[in-house]
Every structure is written in structure tokens, then in C-alpha cells.
Length: 184
Length: 279
Image (tube, rainbow over all chains, first blue to last red; front, side, top):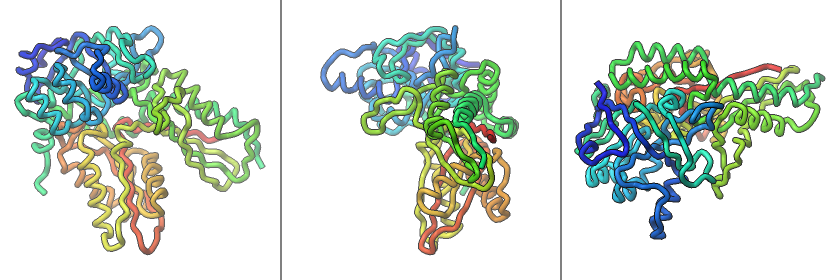
């Protein structure tokens, strides 16, 4: 049975999640990908305030398609998370609690997840139409000039995810393939 | 000499990209269904279930199946007896791309590589043109997402590395890519030619129906052996572990130089999209 998780996410709830756990996430999350992460970290470098809260929040590495008429959002699947590895530890240090994306994370991110008490969820890459059905509202909240890469607040209901990296050091991207690899 | 108005090219490109971004072909769907039956990992089975459900929703609702509607790659075979009229055929292709991405609510994903400024209409297309006998024009739209494109690699092997070197290069590319390129993938391999030709061959091999073996018996054997070795890696659907890492391996070859053995690997995610038309 999947675990129901709400966003923003409490530290206790994040710490209780384990790699391999199936999750349905509901609440408000923020999209941010390459260009938005670069801007956020540039603001941190300059000591300026960020346009979105970080504490306890969940970011979704995604750049949606424009919405079909009448829909809140277009296709909206995850992008490759490792491109955000350069930025993620800084944001986790500032209170970011959860990340949603696809594909494995580097060692520095896994360490920051353990150190600051975060969690990394995997969404199904290439399931953009399916995931769009879980998004009930979307609005641009920062960097509108970035188009698809703008930061959007999404209200999601029962977004299907798998815990991929937990704060106790579990990493499904390592354990999963190891369990199915044939002996060389 | 046959005259073809470039407006026909524009319309064909528009409709091909609209179709390709909304639905994968029956060949890919059949491979995904077989993968779902065969997969043993619970995460892998669930990912494949979601992918099949997603592809059904996208086709039914006429929405893009993936938000990465890609760079607009076009394969253009022009009969040597064709004369294009009514304007610049390259501009017509770009207009067709722009209209498809606007009308389909597809994402504008193309930008200047240095300034990172978005062109806002997903142009220009990447066009591979060949002059062929006859008086027809064959157009193939192959939108390419960059989750998989980023995992592609080029190897300039030495002749001494031989077929064994080719096999190792391909398996190593898939192993290093892990869960990044949205497995289960289709692995396109180009062997021979020059550096740039090898990669073009690798991409062109992806246009073949998913899982259809090479006509060349030696290449077909290599494809089967590579698929076996890749699926033994255990990466699985979405990289979460499992038996199905690749749906198929496709190889194309061309003669190369006595001093070289170029091998290009072009990775294709499970949204293996392409659509063709003949004018």
C-alpha cells in the first residue's frame, strides 16, 4: 500500500521515508529546473531573498508543456535530476526538504540528504500526460521570462512517486539494479 | 522533373510532428507490452504500467506524451528529379515545426547554446538531407528528447579493438547512462564512416521499427548479443532495477578508413517517436 505524503513536508515525515517505498504525494510543490536553479543560487550568492520559500518545501524538476485549452497544465513529467546536483546541496542546506525527478543522484546530494534530513523521490520519466492528470492548479510564481523553465507552484493530488534516496543512506538506484544484475 | 510546392512540405512537417509527439508507433507499444509481461521487478512493472497508461492517455486526449517534445529532427530524402517551388524548403520545414509546436501545445525547448536565449518556437529543425534517385520526397519527423540524447557517446576505436571493442563500447554507454535516459531505451548504434557519419547512422538506425533485426545477418547477431548483455546489467525500467533495460538494439554500418573504427551510440528513451510521409 502506498504511503500518503503531503507537501510541504515535515522533517519527521521525511526522515521516516525509506528507499523503495511507494508514495502518493498531495499538496503544493514548486517546479524548478536548470535555469531556475542557476538563478536561485545566484540570488543566494548575492545575499538576496529568494522568490519562493525553501523551508520544508518540495521541488519538482520539471518544465511543463503549455496547457491544452481548459487544462491547468500540459504534459509535465520529470527531467533528469543529476543536472541539478550542482545546486541541490545548497538548497537542502537552506531547508529544502524534498526533490522529485528522475535518475540517480551524485554522492554530494546523497550526503546532503542524510545531513540535512531530506528525501529524493523518483517520478516516472516520460509519463508527462499521466502526471499532468495529478496537477489540479498551476501558476507561475517566479522568473516568468524563463518560459517552460519558470518556477510554478503546482497543487497536486496523489502524485505517484517512489522514494529513491532516503536520509538513512538508502539509494534505490544502487540497490535496485544490483538486485537484478547478472553475475559477470 | 517534378515540381513540389514547399507549402506541401510545410503542411507535411506540421502534421508529422503533431502525430509523432502525441503517439508512439504500434511497434513501440508492442515492445512495451512485452516488456511489461516479462519484467520481474515490481518497480519496473509499475513504471511500465504507468508508461503504457500514459501513452494511452496522450493518444486519446491529443496531448504530448512527454513534456520533452524534443528538438525537431527531420530526415529528408529528396528525389533528384524534384524541383521545389514557392520558396526556401528549409524555411518551409521550420515553419511546419513552429506551427506544429504552437498548435500542439508542445514545449519550446530550443535555445542559443552560448547565451541560453530561447528561440521560443522550437526552431531551427535539425535536418539530415539526402539526394536519392526518383521524383519523390520522403520526410520523417523524429522529435528527440535530451534526457536520452545527453547520454549518447562517440568512440573513435582503433582497428585492433575490433568487434569486441564495439560491443564493449555500446554496453559501457548504456551502463554509464543508468537511469538517466528514461529506460527502457532503444539503443541506436552507428559503426564506420567518419565521426559525424557514425552518429548520423546511429540516429538513423532508430527510425527502424522497434526490435526489427538488421537485414545483415552479422549485425543482427550483434544486436541480439548486445540486447542480452544490456539487459543483464539489471538497470531496469527507469533505472530502479529490473530485467528490461533496453527494448531493442539497432545497428547500421558503413565503410570506414583503414586506420579507424568509429562507433557512435545514440540513446533513445522509451518514447521512441517518429512519423514519415512521402510526397
